Length: 124
Image (cartoon, rainbow, N blue to C red; front, side, top):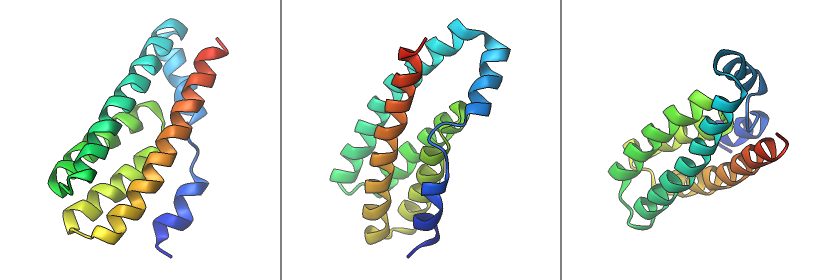
């Protein structure tokens, strides 16, 4: 079992401390708008990553992962950030079996993260 498989499940979907800091720095309304934007972008960029995966376009996948890694980090989506980093590296090394496993884990983490974002937005 690869290290990432043991580690990613231990990471939170959303880093509550990061979100609290953003709320203190920006205010509740601004954070809500940013989280909605993050969710929309996550869906769009996730679809673009899935399209590149279906086309076996590893270079395109690496570019999407790089962008997603940054966005996820900004909002404290730690599990998605970690998996995007690992997926980007696997794409750059051209490791098809690792890419497939990471892609599946990343897509699941994205769905779970977006559900957490929606729950957070719904509770406001």
